[in-house]
Length: 227
Image (spheres, rainbow, N blue to C red):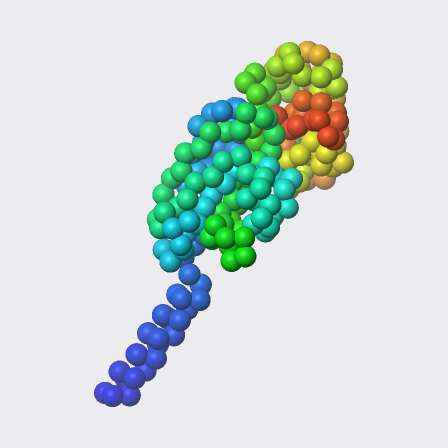
């Protein structure tokens, strides 16, 4: 009997060590990925209960390098502390500037000890920017007929392109990795026909307010599949 209890205690110890080493899941999640400027955004989080109260979630432009607590501190567009909670929902205002952003969870508000441990990306668009399609799956090379609306303030070379979904959401990367595009040509609404890529996979239709790597921003994204 003693040997059985010893074995059970050893198993329990091993399980405890496993839990201690793996910890609690560190996640951020959103119900959708596109928001209008200044719209309320609800972001759900999970975090280890032993995080300090000043573990924090911040809104950071997607082009800012990940894993650098100093940059997340310097470049954020708003943040909130977890205050010792292991799960919950935080409500932020979307930035006033359209573009690609992340929510980033940092384990501690300390530039030396804090680590970025989770992130989730989203896009902020100006009201009036939309793309719609009548289906979300296309054959390779098939015509994709889309409808769009756009603010009148967009540059004449504002554009919509097809970009692999895994590419980060910035105008410069959209330009470098697009699989076809067309300009809006100062139109605030209209239709456009693009060819589905020859290679199957997950893609986005991404609207950009200007064809300029420094001034342009992605303002809307809609996903579809090629197969």
